[in-house]
Image (cartoon, rainbow, N blue to C red; front, side, top):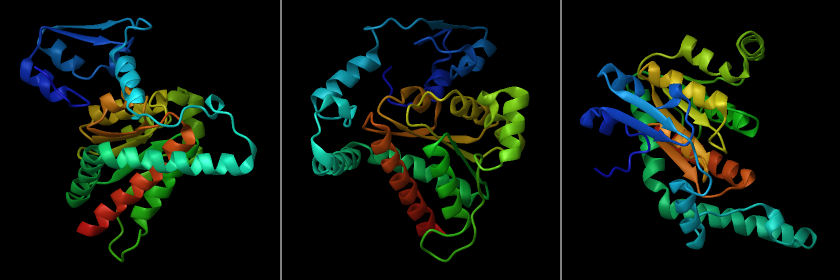
Length: 268
């Protein structure tokens, strides 16, 4: 059976496999469907990643050849003077947004619909990220609690990046990897949505938060970049911005968040 779900939980439950194999050195507690298979008496195996034999790397090579992944490190191109630098940045920005419009709309729509539906049920939105993505999480939570463009009721949204006492206490007592998952454990209810933002898609604390949310029957939405397949594979919906450059990815993330706010305000 061929599937295009980023997280094959539905397929695993349908097939009830005796053996579940995950490639790429995945930690046991990050393999979606592992508990289900073991509950049936099955076996779960994580096989090592062999450089040069990754199907994801093969797909990325094809995408680069077709212009599907944009924004390699600027060192790949000689830049002379600020005018060329600015022009290149704007051109790259437009290319990323164009590629996202051409191929990313279904994922963007799916993520927004998960958020809208959760709000309609009376659930809340939790958001988390590191660095610039932490700022994005706070920004988007504010748009929901306050308003984006339309006068409407306040919508419950919490950025898990803003409580310095909680962040420092959890990091000190449990480790930095748990700064978000511990807050999810404390604050989330079934049906809530966790939006995990990571340009790389590999941030351990974001992955841990997503896994905690899944364990609590929350919906999960990811925002990441072209190489963020790890995060995307753990989420109910994920938008992979077709770029490998952090700045371009973050620019797209805030635009996507704004579009989700527009979807929310169109319904509420």
